[in-house]
Amino acid sequence: MFKQYNYMSNTEPSRFTEPPYDYDYNVLGLNKKRSFTKGELDRTDYYGYVDSGGTHQELILSEYRTYYRKDRMVYMRIQQIDWYLDDGSVGATKNTKKHYSLEESIKLGETRRRNVISQLKIETIGLIQLVSGLSQVNATMVGMAFLGEVTDEISQFIEGIEDPLKNKILTCDHHAWLDEEIPDTGGVKVREYLYNSVDLDYSDKLYIE
Image 1 (spheres, helix red, strand yellow):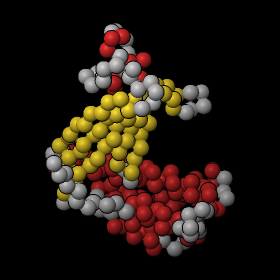
Image 2 (cartoon, helix red, strand yellow):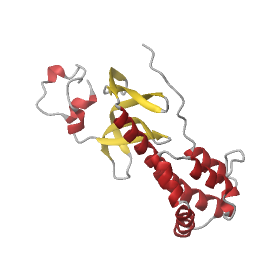
Image 3 (tube, one colour):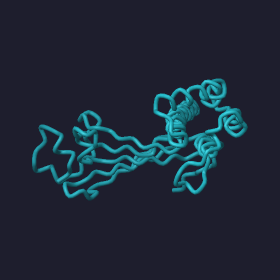
Image 4 (tube, one colour):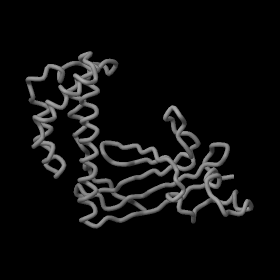
């Protein structure tokens, strides 16, 4: 039996072993858990509920997204959807394609870079707290002061002009925490980590039938 049917009404039990390809699972009120790689949404897991401790439970289905790019622009996305059976194994899979117009691709790029900046803000404060031993409140103040210095560069980054922010991270010389090593990373410094987080890959990735 497919787990999704546990969250659906008005479905004949005789259909519970059939893949739920034709049902819109977005209207079932499932709890989404999204995963990003450098700002690109590449996986969404749908769970039945979140327990009192905030942990997602009962994985119903997963979406995996692969993006195809030419001349720095995404022109197509393939999404694989896996539905899980009661025993936790994948019982059915479906692939869909989405083609992007130039306007859609530009907006997708902006969304990706906004996601990168949102993550950068979180990671900056977390890393300051980790390497300096400051409280979360004080680490937040230090981190926001640094981010305030690169407001213009952040705005340019979102618009697709990425080098100013990358150069600022590399050359900023009045924040000692930037050159502190992150524990358990083999010597990676905060500066290197933050630079890598905003260094996006736009290499061609072509779809081959």
